[in-house]
Image (tube, rainbow, N blue to C red; front, top):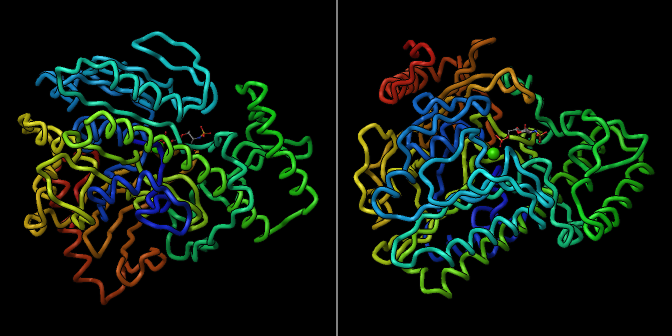
Amino acid sequence: MTDDHSYQAISAYNDQLIKTPNLDRIAKDGVLFRNSFVGNSICGPSRATMLTGKHTHKNGQINNRVKFDGNQVTFPKLLQKAGYQTALIGKWHLKSDPQGFDYWNILPGQGKYYNPDFIEMGKKKRVEGYATNVTTDYGINWIKNRDKKKPFCLLLHHKAPHRTWQPDTLHIDEFKNKTYPVPANFFDKYENRVAAKEQRLSIRSRDMDLNYDLKLEHESIKGRFGKVKHTKRMNEAEANRWNAHYKPITKEFLEKKLEGDELDLWKYQRYMRDYLACIRSVDENVGRVLDYLEENGLADNTLIVYTSDQGFYLGEHGWFDKRFMYEQSFRTPLLMRLPKGYERKGEVPALVQNIDYAPTFLDIAGVTIPKEIQGNSIKPLLLDNTNDNKWRDAVYYHYYEFPNEHMVKKHYGVRTDRYKLIHFYDDIDVWELYDLQTDPEEMNNLFGKPEYKVLTKQLKKRLRELQVEYEDDTVEKVKI
Ligand code: SGN
Ligand code: CA
């Protein structure tokens, strides 16, 4: 799993931004979920959902601020009980100590890209190297040294490509001269969408900082975060390569004196280069894990899953970050390479969600799925496509972290294969309705239009049913 890796930046989903041959290997040999979603698009909540198989109003992790109640039933605990060796390596971010793992070695908080600290079974130490490589080293070593008589479950959680998108200095130059297609709605004016207008996650404003986010370091550039020195944790060789890359960029930027749209577009390209360079390392390291499994005879009896804690905006609506129920952050990549006996190949269209991971893993391992788990096992969809029609017709969403640095308002909603209905609440009371078939970019809010009255009523009814089914008592149920 990665942190903030959007599906647009995996070539198996979209080959316009970056080639990810190793991630694509998982999809090519296995399955790619075309409609994979989270229930609450932010780190801690999404991770707690994956562990428990429950929406965040049920597992308590409604935002990043609260501490995860580690005494809950989670899939690693149940696998452990069933005789699996379990391990967690990399980003955790749930504040309480991990439970249900024979071995854990986590990054504190968000973790650092360069020479990061790791907390190994409660003991903190600094490790030399680039986080994505180091996390993979730990993962492969654990698989190597495991008890070979027992089955295993490893959660390998990269910090990348989370903000502030610090690439490995060995790869940044590959991205220096790349130019990326600008999303059609990059200059979105947010007409008829109040919450979208009032966010603070815009590339086109000071939300995206020249110094902190885009690595320009110069006395004339006053960042919102003070003067950030990106080489702080680096060794001399790393710092030298870093400066050799970013100093000329800073110089050129100062000479250009960009303003208005030109400045915004420059920021977009600069952001994309760093974000995608981080993915480059992720892809390479995923390849190392796949190679290890193949070379050691483990590929045929292991379920390999690649996902992210949520999606991310890569300039759509002019944004970075996540949190909104709009497509880019509501979706999350999901690729699986299946063990022998599971014959499904190619794209799976079903609406799956991160509540489904825990029951799926338990099911495949032959462990009974506890009744209180809210997700469904994806296992039937992995055998063949005959069960696709029996799958759910709608997914539920609820986001809570407001007010917060990015000021995305509280909202919940429902999405079917074609429509999406969202209710923004708390400091506002605003509804949005989208037809994803005619308006995939979600620019045209149809809520309140007379011709959509019947559809709106049906969607409200479905939304209310989901609130009842999932027992979401954190808001008043939708009135129809
Ligand atoms: C940090 C980031 C935010 C980001 C949150 C949540 N700011 O606070 O931009 O939205 O994490 O991210 S930073 O200045 O620290 O980079 S999450 O993936 O952990 O939920
Ligand atoms: Ca995240």
